[in-house]
Length: 336
Image 1: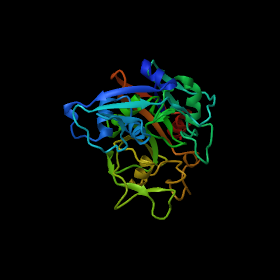
Image 2: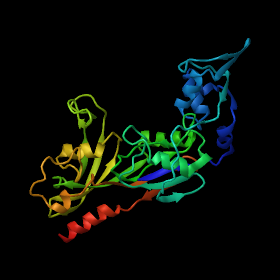
Image 3: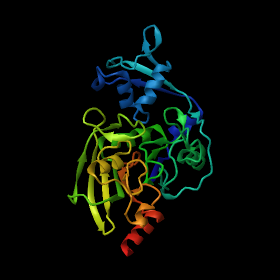
């Protein structure tokens, strides 16, 4: 997975890390009647709306009045032209996650972004079952004190997630401005993500779109499923790239939305689950080719990632070749 980590080069981010910062803003006429948090976000694009909401809740935002500065605690309060607000932005708190020196596959790096190819088997976030040796642990060590805070904490901001046993490209912000910029592209679907997958069988149509709301399985709560009602809207575009005699196909999938296990769930819903998927795979593997049935993980790789650089606004595009285990599997299928 490609990890995109925005590395703040501007002095504002460096000072934000170590000292409190004060900003004074005057509401322009164009923002009349907006919510306070939305107005502040429009005037301070380097900070996420969630970060600004937390400052409001902590009484770090005041409104100038004839009687002096008055803390504003309602993020939904409507602003008026000419109002003057002062924000006190504290330094980023240190992350509670341990930094661990773990080798990372760096694909691209400049003054603003770091791009990493995540291997299968590495969890992105620390969790009860994976408390350490995660991508976040590795990033904290790699980035050191250059992190200037996501939501007030010195940590990398994961913009979108990839499963532990999926390999490929992933975007991670290093400060609030980059996080807001990449998250906005994710929401507007201009951050493009393409995956390669090996699936059982061959879809009837060589390409198409799978549409179906995804939510928790009503009986098996650890699984996601396509729901007739409820869930979240999800769309996956697919294209069959190659068919193998062993009853599997190489498929490219492009995410229009990003839901938990989306490709794995949608391909199962289409009747062609991923090879090696321990949760959504075929129930019976009897009589199938041992080269394929022995694959130890879901055969899924995030191989393309494109977006607009959140600082320079330059278009960026990256590709990560298939990892060795999937390359070996394809070679065995081609020779079988």
